[in-house]
Length: 356
Image 1 (cartoon, rainbow, N blue to C red):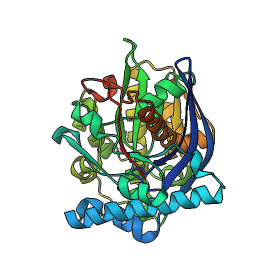
Image 2 (image 1 turned 90 degrees about the vertical axis):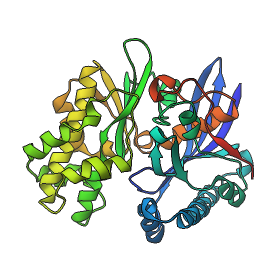
Image 3 (image 1 turned 45 degrees about the vertical axis):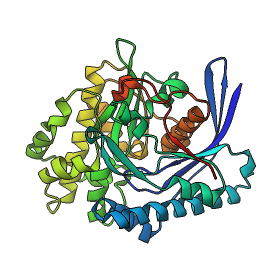
Image 4 (image 1 turned 180 degrees about the horizontal axis):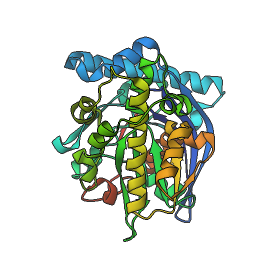
């Protein structure tokens, strides 16, 4: 039996904070199991958040400094997390860190997640595995999505498909040819949070702002006609696409409620289209958007697929758990990408190991 105790770190495009999961994985008779031992989301300080939000706009020297500074802040968070829970760090095999994506351009052969692995290892005293995406990209893949390996090996008995409602919404499932497919569907929380910020809120709790608005049918039609939605997978989205293709269609200065209502409907329609076209029977929904009851209601309205909402802990920490799992697979010398999902030429063990 193989056993690993991993601290998984996830920082998503929504920049809600650092998701930390202390987890244990075991493999027996070719089957992996997991336990979440501790979990917490630690918000970023105002200064760090502001710097992360501007990361795509700063100079190369400033980005290199942010890479180190972000790792330093993550190390402080991890050390506090372990201390507050009286976790014996000698039992931890590694930290598996996604980092913060700044650039994701697989068509140009790279994806950049900041949060220096060497700094994180040195300041926690623990081995660190990071840079999970570029190994897949080197094999011709998109470097995303990477969650399907966890859906396949940890969660496949819970539903026929898996939907994550984060900054973008992505899905993974087994198609009719019994191949795992995964791709980004559409923007989700990133544009919704942007509008909520105009109302002085971090996010639209329960979809209450959207409920007050009216759908702009002209804008909805423009969004639904974006070329990305008709392109074949494997495919993935990044903030560059949002800035270049999506945001220019939206007049953010107009009525926020109407914008919110229209964008929420757009996301629900695109998700439902994927569910219907692929004849999916049930879907496990995780990520912050799973708490947006109005979005869930609109997905159900447009689709006959059964929507399964798991425990609050899985909704909030599934991605961090799966990146911890990627760390376990790395230590166990197992492949952790799904080529049918990412488009890579072959299976590879992802991640770069930094010793403390």
